[in-house]
Structure formats: structure tokens, C-alpha cells
Amino acid sequence: MGLFDKLKQGLQRTAQQLVDRFDDIVNQADAADARTRDVDAETAEALEEVLLMADVGVAATAQIVGAVTRRQRRGESLRELVKQEMLRVLEATTPTFATQSPGASVGKPHIILVVGVNGVGKTTTIGKLAKQLTREGRTTLICAADTFRAAAVDQLQIWADRAGVDIVRAREGSDPAAVVFDAITAGKARQRHVVLVDTAGRLHTRTNLMNELDKIRRVASREVPGAPHEVLLVLDATVGQNGLAQAREFANVAGVTGIVLTKLDGTAKGGIAVAIAHDLKLPICYIGVGEGVDDLLPFSPRDYVDAIFQEKW
Ligand SMILES: Nc1nc2c(ncn2[C@@H]2O[C@H](COP(=O)(O)OP(=O)(O)OP(=O)(O)O)[C@@H](O)[C@H]2O)c(=O)[nH]1
Ligand SMILES: [Mg+2]
Image (tube, rainbow, N blue to C red):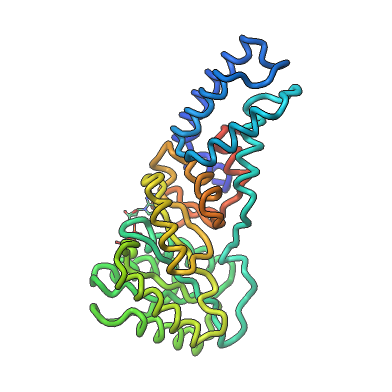
């Protein structure tokens, strides 16, 4: 299956809901001969409702509806105008892709930290990412810095086996920063391009656990100049707007460089991507559209908007 087909399939629930309602609005607006008029108050209100339902968020919705309302509809459909405004929001930040970043030089692996609250999909994302990196010829080592539970390391081991990469693990309960140190040392010695660091889920309100992330960062930066090169915050799309509050805290403390938005296949609220780009000003780098090893896609604003508006279906 091609990437766009995978994306369409993953965003199906969002697309269905959005497009159904959208068609209603457009039909009503067309009945009022809207082609030649501005968007009227009733249409604007209906549009606002649809976007909020898709979890686009209050601020981004206001911006989009405002822009659409201001623009004369010179032959352009309402749908086209909304798409353009959504795209504008999503394109304001530029995604970066771990698998496409320049190859790290020998002895200086690229360090990617994966962080987020419990159960959002960090470990799964690491597994998927390891597979992609491997496929693109970038040698990878996984670091199991979730030392809270033995099960966490075993779960990561399964993913590492699936991706065919090795893993540096420590005993349960040891200091995560020490495991990161070990992994970076191994990554240098084995001349790996990338070290992917899996961290334990943590609530952004737990100061001691957030400080632990800071310690991991410090260890990494001491061992490789410029590390961590990426700090990916994983957000669960099904959590919706609450995820934004988490994200702000993580961004402040953990120096987040990009977002991975997971579980889009399980929600009709795929508009959350627009809220993230608008409110957090952080790039969405990857999206998760399933539990399988190939269900991680590089984020493309244009494809995303096309998929949720069921274009090119
Ligand atoms: N449908 C779907 N499920 C996903 C996706 N990503 C992760 N999951 C599922 O979400 C659950 C939690 O995933 P994990 O990777 O263990 O999450 P985690 O953030 O590492 O969890 P903790 O380490 O406990 O904090 C698992 O059942 C995954 O299969 C996705 O994109 N789509
Ligand atoms: Mg995990």
C-alpha cells in the first residue's frame, strides 16, 4: 500500500465526519446562491462547529473561519478556502524527519529522545522509527531508558527484534541517565548513525520525573556535541485538546523539537494536528496510523489536508 493510501485509511474516521458535515454546509450555502456572496453568518457558525468537532481547537478555528469569511468567494468553493487556510496553519512549521537528517559522522551518533505521558505510543513509535531508519540504511541502536518496569524493556526488545536493531538495556530500577550514557558509548563504539532513546511515560506535573529528563539531556549533550539532536514528544490524538496542555509543559522543560501524533486511526478528531501547529508552533514530524511496524508516516501538511477532505480518493 502506498503512503497516501495508508494516510487516507488512517484518517478515515476524521474524513468521514468532516466531509459529511461539510457537504451539508456547502449544500445549504449553495442553495442560498453563495457562489457570488461572502460567507454568511450562518455558514460561518456551522463551519465553526464542524471544525471544533474535529478538534481543530478554538484559536485555530477562529483564525480559519475568520480568514475564510474575509475572503471573497470568487468561484472558489468553501471547501477549497477552508483547505487553504488549514494548510496555511500546518505549513507555518516545518517538519523534520529523523530518517532524512544528514548522516552523523563516525563516533558522533545522532541522539533522538522520545518523551511523553504514559501510554501515548512512545515505545511503538521507536520500533517503527527504527525500522524506517534501517530501511534507509541508517544504522540504529535503541536505548531502553524506561527503567521503571521490566515489562517496558521486554516490549522494546520485541520492537528491536522486529526492526532488526540492537538494544542497550539496564537492570530494572537503575538510573535512566546511566543507561543513556551506556547506550551512547555503545553507539559510538559500534559506529551507529542514530541512538533512539525510549523514556518512561511521565506526567508533565511530576517535577522529579521531568528533572530526570533534564538529566538525560545533560548526559547526552556531554557525550555528543549538539545532543540530543531531536526531542520528539509523542501525543495521543485520541486525547484531544488535553494533550496540548501536556505538550506545553513538556516543551518548556524537555526542549521538545517536534511532535509525533499517534493513534489517528482511532479517532475522528484528526483536526488536532491543526490545533497543535497553531497553538504550539512545533512541527509535527510523524503520525501514527496503526499498531504495525509500518504504520508511521512522515507528516506532510498537504497530504494530510487532502486526506481529511477526501481528495484524491
Ligand atoms: N491504533 C494505534 N495504536 C497505537 C498507535 N501507536 C501506539 N499504539 C498503541 O498504544 C498502546 C501504547 O503504546 P506504547 O508504545 O506502549 O506506549 P508508551 O508511550 O511507550 O507507553 P508507556 O511506556 O507505558 O508510557 C499500544 O497498545 C500500542 O499498540 C497508533 O498509531 N495507532
Ligand atoms: Mg513505553
